[in-house]
Length: 218
Ligand code: G3P
Image (cartoon, helix red, strand yellow):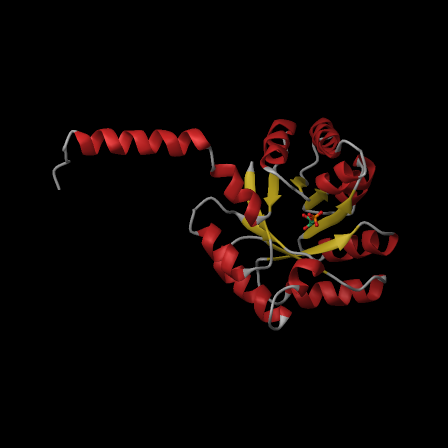
């Protein structure tokens, strides 16, 4: 399972790329609106930093303008993937852009049938929003599992990208559900690597070593 970062913060992306485990980035209009500067510059910078797929969402809502905006955003950098919401106009725009060879991330997916439709429209990725379903009392990860099952049964190549991730348990469940990718906010990455027993264990190893006054040859 690949890890993407769910943020538009160049500072956070740089920090996490240095870990060496990041394959891509997902942004959305809310995330980009929080960053200072021209969106196009931010997008180009992120593409250079991550060196892999960077999802950028169109803000137009009608077919013609979604297609126009999608083409323009895709021309910014070879790593840009166009994020399109699962609406009637969105489906048509997905089909047109994917036929032109532009990679699509179908976003705001809340059930497996929406994912199936997006795959038929040529989406490279589908993004089920796990946390937002959990927020309203549903089992968000069940949707991920069902999409994975459907895509496996029908040999669909579209990748399942688990999104709206709120905590490390979501990452665990996405892995168990068979998601191809999980897009994770920076704060969740930090929580993923922490364990109190790791800290206690390290402290003990180092104090034992120090007490014994040992050293490795340098
Ligand atoms: O980028 C889409 C998705 O991950 C948004 O997450 O936390 O706003 O529901 P959230």
